[in-house]
Length: 134
Image (cartoon, rainbow, N blue to C red):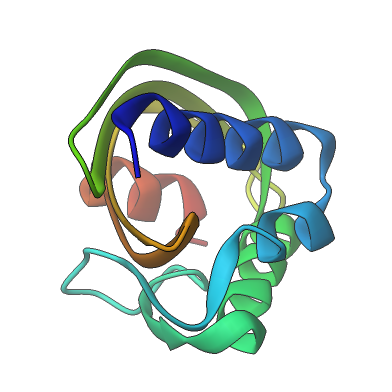
């Protein structure tokens, strides 16, 4: 698949996330998608590996239950034949503590037949956990 089409899929996922439209996100992933936030900790409810569309839905449910997204701004997106790399500006507020954190996110996407088959996201886990800690 051409690189521009791959970037369009990722942009569509970002737009859907911004609208809280998890169903639109799920429409852009494979049934067997391998999805994870790269974190050694499991303290944030969205950390840990996820499989399939139900796993991705659980990822977004964990996010929505724990934080309010204050900023989610793609800064740069690049693609190859089957991979997309993105850097985003992200700011969150913990629903439990009210504390905020701001950071860059790094996303790695691998696509198959026009859908995401593999996703890894990295963030400043120390800032996230500090915001979430009671």
